[in-house]
Image (cartoon, helix red, strand yellow):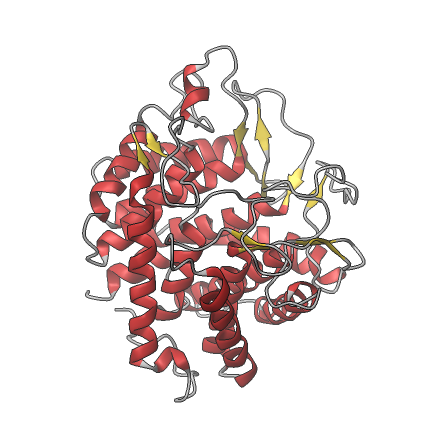
Length: 422
């Protein structure tokens, strides 16, 4: 059974121990779940606009469908009404119209699925979320989840995993030819999350070992050497691509430079991996904790209030000079989750201070009390913006930030929630 409080290290004065704060987190999570329910479309889930409405031309986005399936499966398992039917819709969509019946794997959108001439590329980033969604749906006993997980794992392992490198390959053409000359930290970061979830759901520790190998290469080797400023873009020969996407600084997945929000996301993933290894094996490399601390502080130095206003900004260059000043909602969510994780791991008051500071910022600036949900991004003056992330498509990051403080660091979300009443 999961522990009722996240950690005995928490000081008695911590917000996370306060029943009123925990109730606020639950209420905020429920509000986010309700806001995103209209994103359901015939073949999955589509992107909502700023008012929480589906545009007339909305199509199913497969990454979004996987994320929604993951979230609604866990929320349904917690007893939130209306969520399990949405998770079941997501599973059916991933088994049906979003899947490539000819070559295997998944299309990026339902539109690509109908375009036999193209079909787009097969992305590691997308497939990691399908694996995560399937694993969460299995825990929630959603119909079709088990065959979805089996197929997704088969594709993910056979097509994307590089045993020699200990990382996931980036992308291929629809027929699995033309491997991209690229190794990316972002897709592998989300693969670490998915690997830990799969290890918990299947009982197969090889996935946890793979999460450790990915983390060791990207964090303990490359990021540590750069004082925990996380390098994102590499060639297949592991040459750092310092100018990658210099002409596309606002790219939503592979922006030029460094992304402080990712420093913070890696920080809490390393702590969760440490906890998972300790829980299962009784030992974990000391560097997981040491690197987590380094990543958190590097991320807050590089990202927080860099231009005179609060919030974690989007990107900086290799000298840590701000490049894109907008404050994406996901950066704040990952900062919250990292602060909560380090607070649970250490009891150090500095992480309590950061946890409160970031939540106060989110409450005062990012939560949209007029139209609902969270603003997906704010500009450098903390006004609503749409430079990188228009509309309000994403539920995954914000909702997980409301759940993470309520749970132990291990096991992963779906398994931990299922254990709460076990």
